[in-house]
Image (cartoon, rainbow, N blue to C red; front, side, top):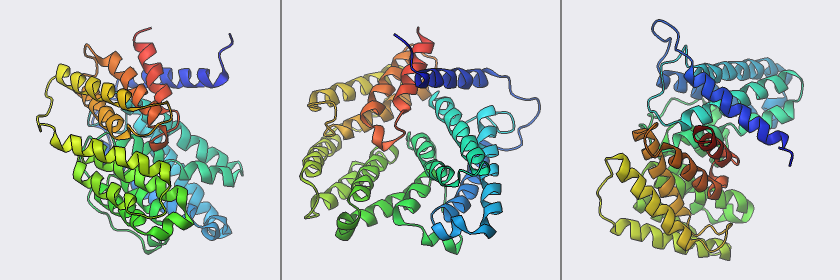
Length: 345
């Protein structure tokens, strides 16, 4: 059986990421800390989003040079993160960083090149989708929230979900949750933008569960969605099960795992419960359990990135993200499966 070109692309991406991760860092002190680089990326992306979100701004001849310049800078900043030479090492040892950052850098460079080649509409779409990489990385429940930054007046012209995604991408988690909550609480958004309304529900719950580890906050947005009269029946059925899972979570002991074995045991228990609850592959009733399991897996990978269970953890991450694919990057689970295979052929 022939291996598809897409699989070879995935394999080569993993190999490149691993090779870059193994490179020795440049001699001397790095130019920036990891957080400083991320904040600069956030500032550049904020400027880009303002131009990308408006047809008038994006297509104005006077703005083209600025857009290309920002796209080029965004690409260079992403590549510096990947090469890990001008920037200090990342704040945690989770191998997910190398997987996500490698794809992030490649996609940012691809977006800039297609923009300069004249494929502006396509490049615009790619650049607007870049928040997915930031959200996939930043919602691993690791690291602190960044304080709110000063925003240009034009930023307020962005749509509510665009602002929410940017806030989450730049680790302004509380502001992101407030935007999701505000969008869900307005029933007219369900009528005008039903798909966006559902995405806001799922994103708000994911943020509360994975980042804030706060069942009460997740319950708040679930209750809002359940109280919306015209919410679709299938979603309400899922929401009712999410509510049960969140209430069960609240009743659990508050002990936190401290060891590699403890993190693994928690991840395995949550995945087993999720599989028992999930009735068929596309059933989303177990999302809360899978979200919690994915967080536990990242805790395991961070605590022991090369430990006894690290290969198994990569496989478990793939299982979680295969179910949660529309909350993150659509192909993220495949990268975890490939990383697992490369580590233990």
